Length: 554
Ligand code: G6Q
Image 1 (cartoon, rainbow, N blue to C red):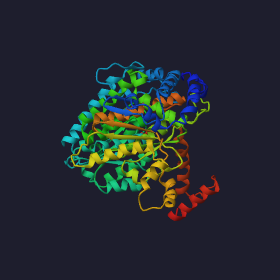
Image 2 (cartoon, rainbow, N blue to C red):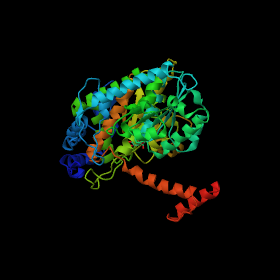
Image 3 (spheres, rainbow, N blue to C red):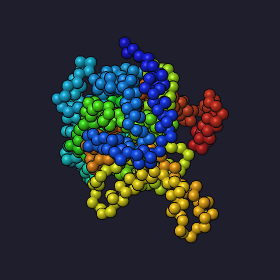
Image 4 (cartoon, rainbow, N blue to C red):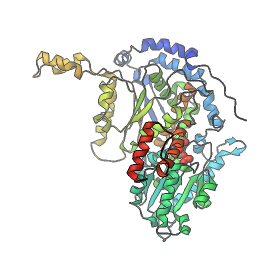
């Protein structure tokens, strides 16, 4: 029996939203410079720490009243009750009738959580134990390929949630990896992706992980079959078991593919794809960095879970990150959010967050199916600092749109090269200061006066060299990028996304928006590869299909 969908009052009709709206009429005129000048305690007042992370949200256009009103809204929208329902395993993914329990994947052994009569923690740890045993055999050289050689290369074949998490984490924890094993990721149906990887590995020493919750995803299945054929060119079907393992919930399909069910690492329907790196989907991570560090990643996330679950909203980091983001989106009209990791190993983190936030909250109807009455998820994008500074920060400083930025940095580096880390942090802090303060026309004049320019030349330059400032940002700091701090960082954004989903009253755990393109692609593929000319489309789509058929002589 499907759960009853309670109709929430429209967001804009709630008392605290209305209070925020009248507060925002004033706040829109505030200048961050003035807020800092007026309150020397602004930094200690608008910062918080949890699970090894520190959040400075003082460079947002908020004051104590704004935060109090935002937290009132969080309470009025039922954030605490919804959070507790998620942790308890209630079926809060209403359109798919599923519990949402990625937090259970990082519960320590012995913790208690029973869902539908099933001891979830025991199930999770049984799979973790198998991942430990398997990763130790492969990493230690005890798991041999068909010709008796140890494995040198891992190829994870998956897409979306079965790729972005493991790929981002493996790269982020690069310095913890064992050099003897190289990890590769193949996701795109574009044959150039797998072709490049297969060109670099030896079938006799390669282990393929076919990572697919459903084991029907078209891109993954095509890549998996390509890998299988490539492997069988130099080996027999009996050798497959030494070189192909699966991470899936679909035992029948992995058997049909030819993978030994003994080499299948299961997970559960209550793990959403974009929340699955903590499950056996993280097998490539455990192989790359070792099970001990994979466990630390889970422990870091669990520490953030405990903070999110128990800390008062006033000091609750995911809640504060969500609420300031919500403020920027709803009341300051910011349509995008830029992520700027000042750590090269976090270069895939913006892409990871794009899926996490935009697939979760890129929705236009509420849980009961009514149209939302405010904008929802901003577009999330970004690139590592300092590279981004030399590319698009121009627009962020002087363009016509205001783009909030999340700066992410570590206080200490994991390398010991002199000079680099101080230069990196100097840039990070300078950028958030510049976005906040800007540079006034008078400051530009003062800079230029006394030089070689005439007064007229100075006046001509002033508008070009002026920075409006007043651009909001958060800074997230941690001591070093470790499995623990990375786990906490990912969980921070998961819970931030959850809180914003509750505010907008959308289902953050389905993704129907990816379905239409899949269906159309199947139709067009049959037209591209079959005899009939395309007819059922518009003239543009028909024309493009005919061009491709002509070029490929099909
Ligand atoms: C994520 C989505 C989606 C999913 C991929 C891969 O939340 O569900 O990105 O992870 O479509 O799905 P499979 O793991 O089933 O191949």
